[in-house]
Length: 292
Image 1: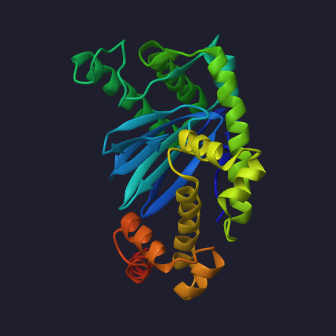
Image 2: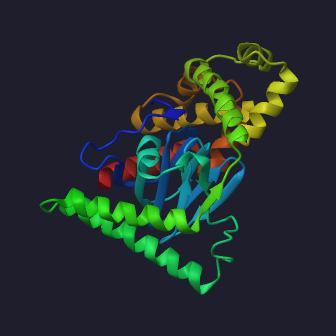
């Protein structure tokens, strides 16, 4: 399983965006980011979306915005059906003059334009955006003649509403600093991707990043919303889950191949994340396969 860190987004040539509707369950995606605005809409189920250190629980009919370069993770414990729209930063810069000078606020944040999430105006805009996303889904899958024109007209209407009601100006100097720090962070996370099976010490990773251990800890926690060790073990956990689902290897063998040397820590993390034991998860996944 390839760990997405700085995620490369596949873009439809006809639509100039990545759009898909998918189903999933028991899936943890560790912290990552990409150069696209991401809109996540939940048809069914419940999904936890964490952006930096702010967690939002999406329920059926909810959606959330994830800005380009926002570090985020997702987790669904049970079945979900998700609409995913990813709009490349290059497209946004071409379509919207001065786009890079701002960002979108999210629905857990206060929006000056809408005053309060409970206001009738907010509910009206939320409903309009939801309807646009659903219509985009219909246009995408029905693929009637010239559907790309219909899809893009809906896309531009969506962007108009987002720009009008959820736009926030940002400090250019802060933007440059953030880009520089993300570049450093990308190197760190790529190192984890390549060495997570090994014992990676704080001294080793701090030296790789060119920072003192103390500053590295503060830097990593600030941008990732978790400690380095927490992130490292989360990456290991996702690989363990993948092997539980796709192989008949023993748990001991799987843990050894993915860098877990502390069995108690692993079991605690697994239970806290999936709310069952590894053997129970294998039975769940086996039953799911038989039912497909």
